[in-house]
Picture 1 (cartoon, one colour):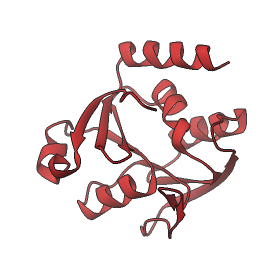
Picture 2: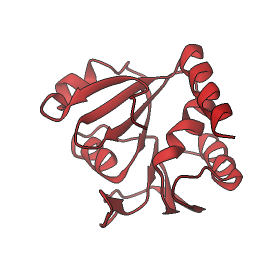
Picture 3: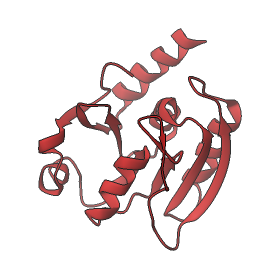
Length: 154
């Protein structure tokens, strides 16, 4: 997504201290992307839901390491959002966290259904390539904005 859905922290601002300013004590943290997920794990901000694909900037990589994570796999081709992916995202929200969805294909656009189905106290984080980290607090306004984007994509 070319336009960030939330607050964009530039690479040099995306440290633990600045990220914590956007989290509440009981925030349900969701990360989309391998690097973002890895960064949060390194900061000891363990995402309740992590969506990764083992690829960073089109290069294969090892998914971030984290023990005691329930892992679900799903196929989601690049530039698509499959109904199977949406079902898996919904299912993940009802599971004991942390949950990792390992995507075969591409996870980028899954930010959109995540924003629609995330619990009320959620904060979604994803990387904006070559710019920084996007932090989206889930509100009804965000859900409506994202639904409009999804409607345009159909």
